[in-house]
Image 1 (cartoon, rainbow, N blue to C red):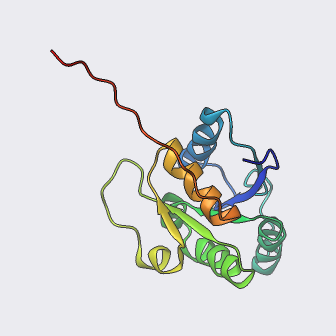
Image 2: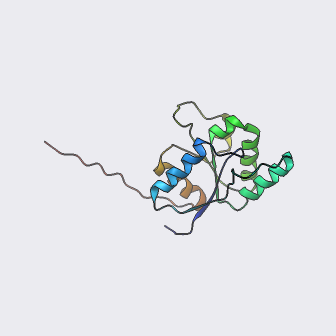
Image 3: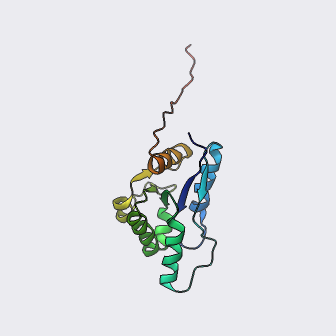
Length: 149
């Protein structure tokens, strides 16, 4: 595994939300995953729609992988679809997160454009990012300890 950080963009609608923050909590929990966040939701959204799209293009262009959050899609579907379509046009893979705390299916546009769907857990997310951004297969093994009586 490389110490070279994976550059990622997490979908946003010009404001952080719980799911956006949660992605980084999962990534930080690993302690061994290095990333650089190219998304800047805390920035002030340009008033003009074309200027907004240009700023999003600037944020997505240097990334290696895009993470799409269904909660953000529900808030601003057109904006998230723009982010996903630009990612595809720029040949960036998309990892879609499942709905957090719900078994509701992902919206069809997200399923259609995503390269991979990840569950909300640290291991699944990091493995998906490594596979999609760097084509690295992880060879993790689960160990289960038990006692025989």
